[in-house]
Length: 508
Image (cartoon, rainbow, N blue to C red; front, top):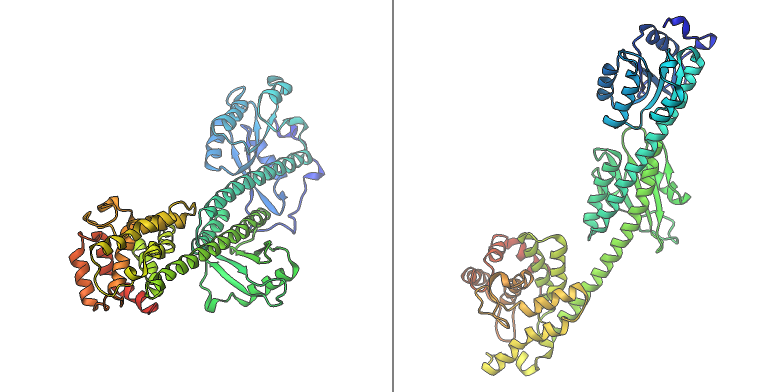
């Protein structure tokens, strides 16, 4: 086929658009034809073609095999113009099958051209092959070629846009699931940065996540920075970012710009949440939309975690109040239960329990002596040594505490029931009330047993004076593997300074 059959007239002349971005990623278009003149004329007509401020990059192949290699090397080819008859009568049609069925590229727009339309009836081709257009070479003028490209690139752009949204929404769903597993604000804050970076394909660049603690009656914006990819000096954000957030707070809606995104979302209790993201390059429309959805999820998740923290704080206070009530009744200090709670948390973390499990033990451990509330005063506060009958009554407090707490459906109370029941069991099986040994004793019971004894020995009681620290350390060494879990005893002895710091923070 001669180049004279490819018609173009004055519309072939074109100039570079003044709006073209010289740094923009070009649209990749593949021309597949065994006629060199077709490649030359196509290049000439499309020399200065641009679409949405992006130029064109033409790739050339003179056979179906060469085209397949180029497609595998360039997965982002937007459009391919393919000759039907090349090395075989149906080489172009077989290439279409390969692209769709074997390479599984459904995004690329495919336009078939032929100089021998009788070899492949147009209706048959359109019906049986996944193509987007079919043209005879004799009818393709310069303006029609450009029209095909505009239509094909728009279609490719929209398909990519939908695909990006699909992938982005899948990521957001995954992020939301991760947020639901967070139990503390520390976990939540760390997760935000990773998920925003994952969502946009960033390397944790300039990402700030903030929650405003101000309410509708406050005029001044007060920010509590819960996550930041960059160090925040003095707990404050850069002035330019604060100024933008103040404007967003006044406008009560999100801010969209090429250089940054600031998401805004208010919750039912009146708190206002902000997500600031800047990635060092232009934020596309897709980025803004995904971040907008994501910031709503962050705000809701933040609110839920704050509510959970408030409930945990209420549970902690309740446990302390109950524990202190028992301690006061036995004429002991309420600081004991706070020290035991913090010792228990530290032991749990060093033992390898999760933050969540360690926090549960911390909240529940103040309930370890709850059963003493049912012990008679003259026995509970006896200054001397108990006789056998009195000691048998004192030992009942473990079972009594368990009975008080065991029917609660609250997980902290359930943990408290275990601790109350087992904190006097011994590693060697010689404890009470069940005579459990080693791993048959729940880890919470083993932890609280050591924490309780460590603190009780160092505190004045109605029946004794506080022991010197060297004597306490010596007893724990002696009882390692006897009364106490040896692994826990080693943790306490190897991290003694940390435990003493807790003792100093909560004096009697």
